[in-house]
Image 1 (cartoon, rainbow, N blue to C red):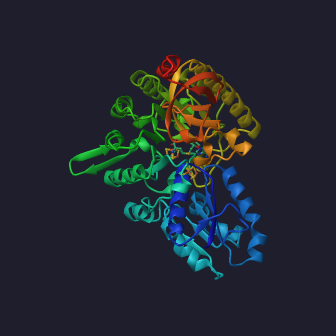
Image 2 (image 1 turned 120 degrees about the vertical axis):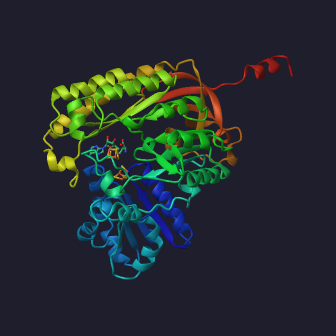
Image 3 (image 1 turned 90 degrees about the vertical axis):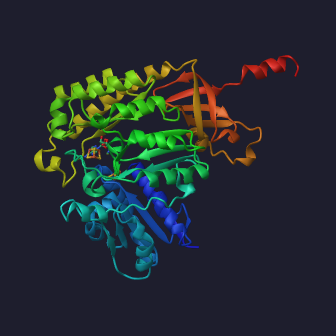
Length: 479
Ligand code: SAH
Ligand code: SF4
Ligand code: F3S
C-alpha cells in the first residue's frame, strides 16, 4: 500500500479539507503514516493568513530537499491557501515540490499525484483569482467535494466539521482569505442535511458547521430562504446528533432569528465566536469591518440578554496600520467590558495583495505589537479566570472527547476495550464550550456526563463525575 504523510496548519476549513483529501486517497489504496521518511507522498496543507505560517511551511519544505534527491519517486505536494496565493512561486523557491494545488481544486489531487509520480513535471492546479473572470466562472473554479469523509481524520470519532459555505465576500483590508478561498457561496441545505445524517449514522454526536462568515449563510429555494437559523432547526431533528455548533460569526449578521434559534434549540451549544478585531472605530474603519464599536456592543448585549449563560469569544488584531496607543486602549476597554470566554489575539501581519497592504504602511513596530499582544492577553486571562471561578461547585454537562493533554503526554494506552477499571484523566467540553478535565474511565469517551466543578483556571475547569444520590441511597439500604 502506498503511504501518505499529511501535515495541516491553519483553520478548521483546512482540517476539514485534509479529511476530504485523505478520504479520496484512501480510495486509491493509500494508508496514512506519521513518518515523512516512510511516506510515498507528502502533503502540506497550508495557511496564508499571517507571514509566520508561510515561513514555517517554506522551512519545512527546505528540509525535504535531500529526501527528494535520494528518492525521486517521493511525491511532495503543497495544498491549501498558500498554494493558491503563491502558485508557481512555490516551484521557484522549492523546485523539488511536485504539486501545487489550491483549496478549490482539491478533488484533482489523486490525478495530480499519479501524473507527478516518476515524471519530472510540475503539476499546478489553482482556481481563478478574484479579477480573472466573471463571478460565475470564478465561483465554478472553486469546487468543494464535501461528501467524501474519513472518520480517522476527525477531531474525535464523535465530532465532525460540516462545511456550509465556502469563500468570503467581506474583504476586510488586512485579510487574504477572500482572494485565496474565492467568492462566498452557500451550500444547498439538502446536501448539508444529508451529510449530517450520514455522520450521525457513523456515530458522530457533535457537528460544527463551518463558514468564514457562517451566519451570512443564505440559500434561496423557490420562494423560501434558508438562513443559518433554518438550517440549525432542520439539523436539530437528526437522531444521534446531540450538539450543534457553528464558526465563525460575523458581527453584523448576528440576527435575532439566529439568537432565538441558539436559545430555543436544546442541542445548540450556547457559544458564539464573533470576532470584534478592535475596540476603536477608526481602526475598524481602516479594517473595513463594516460595523462600529457601538453596533458590536449592541449585538453583544442582545446575545447576553437573549441566551442565558452564553459564552462569547473574539479574535483581535493588535498593531494594525496606524494603531495609536489610544486606539489600543479602546481595545483594552472592549475586552474589559465584554467578558469574552477567551480571545484569540494576533499581531498584524501585512499580506501582499490585500487592500491594507496597498493603502496603509505597516508602521507599528514589532516590539509595540508584542507588548500590546501581551497586555491584552493578560487582561483577557484575568477575566477568563474570574468567570471560570463562577463555575465552582456547579454541575455541567460534558461531552467527553478523550484523554486530556497531560494524559496523552504520559502516553497512556486509552484503548476502548483495555480500560476495565482503570482511571485516566479525560477532557471534554460543556455546552458553553468550556474545557473540563476530570478522572474517568476510557469507556466514558463519547458520552455526555454530569460533572461537578471543584477547581478552575483561565483555560480549564476541573471536576468530578457526579455519582447519583439514588445509587448511594440504595447502597446504604443494602440493595
Ligand atoms: N472568517 C473569520 C476569520 C478569518 S482568519 C472572521 O471573519 O472572523 C482568523 C483570524 O485571523 C481573524 O479573525 C483575524 O483576527 C486574524 N487575521 C486575519 N488576517 C490577519 C493578518 N493579516 N494579520 C494578523 N491577523 C490576521
Ligand atoms: Fe477575512 Fe474578514 Fe472574510 Fe473573515 S470576514 S475571512 S476576516 S475578509
Ligand atoms: Fe489560513 Fe486559509 Fe484558513 S489562509 S485561516 S487556512 S482559510
